[in-house]
Image 1 (tube, rainbow, N blue to C red):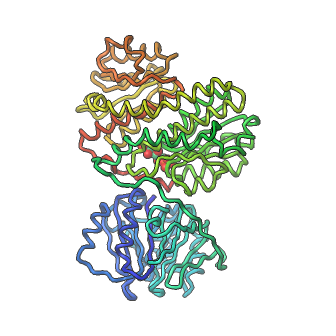
Image 2: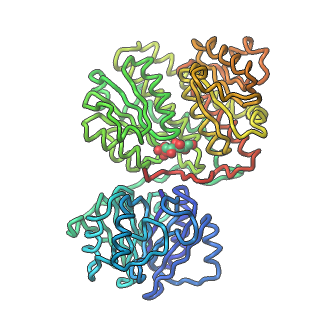
Image 3: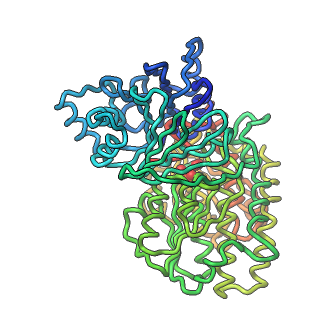
Length: 606
Ligand code: F6R
């Protein structure tokens, strides 16, 4: 993970670096730092904590440098203290670098460098790169970088200052993203477009093993062989919504509230003149020949994939699997040109999902991605893309991007099933009409948020809890449990309701909070029986069910009723209710809702 930034220009570098880091803070917020070139001297200021702590540390230090680099960290090697914060310098201070990625063979390289007399201050893998550069440098940066590349295993995006070239920043990458952009005020490196958009919309995306040099003369690109390269910039569109919290106390709540609008605009953007997913015309030609669909993502995006799998299998009559990207990339699912792999990612930068996509491409599978961030790495690498119209999502816990992913996958399933003649036009249109009602139903849940606020007392004084469900309710249970864990730090498990008796139920204690999802009509009696079983053993149960089941549940104590919707789409309404439940639980516990500990918004290392 981590976010890196570099600047060279006419103005003081520090304000640009700080502003860039603020945009990149979603990538990690354990610690941060900057290094600038004051004349021929490199000044480094870094600290554990948030960017605001770095700003406090910088207050009162007048740095006039017009060239520098910056970093915001999600710790991988070494705890997030001041010493392990980036930037890191080589032994003599000749090189100072910031790094996003992981050097897998850093220990053996470090041992070798130590035996050669190099010294280290931190426990990071990054300092190894700084010292390696020093080892290989003989006056030519490109040649030193190429020598480093030959011995480094892992992933890296680097911004580098070298004392020999005071007005220059070097950028290079392998496996982690690095972009470059030029404006009237200066030239920038950044881990992503968000930090560049305030200055320019014309962005250069560095290829694997490519190096860019930025200085007063402009930008120059070089290939792995050291040959100079011509490169064209891409025009990046500006996000329509601002990344401002407005009057909301948290981004998460604001983003939950945005869902009705996001769902509607996502639907509107994907249906043109009655045609579903018109941008997939080429891919649709392959639908009849497909034998299997794999849904792949990480965390919540995987849960969206699970819901997509359940629906596509049900109405599309095709074998589907859903797998986490970290398993898929090293697993053995047979892939060929009769397999469609669907990659789901809000950021479009998740390292495991990207690697899974590259593997699918190598095996000649067809590829489709469901992505929020336009121009992101996964979007660029995919054969076809469906964009969620969620706009910038700032809270670390995904809400609006998740439900927008669900709506895209529902629409895909309808389109697929219809194109493959598994459902008739009438049935497709009936389901489509129901899909169009989801934004208003999500709004109803948000309007009645006092229910979620009330039911969150279920978790009062508890550090553990359960979520159970069957079928698509199980996919929702997994998402509800993850959301609760990540923002409220309550250790919740998600279980298929029918599996409890096979072991897990032995853990159930009197008073254990348990959220039972029972929105699958056909499985309602089974789910209800499971509720009775856990209640008989003392669980404190909250039931999420459809309004139409109100009568059957009239004797139950805690029932959170959701608007009726066909089973096909109930996971979306459950998600909204569960987001509110975890939000209010975390609020009550005084947690840092938008930036939970140990997490980052975008996971760019595996
Ligand atoms: C949970 C959450 C994460 C992400 C996961 C994938 O609330 O946000 O589990 O869903 O890290 O991220 P993307 O969608 O960017 O690939």
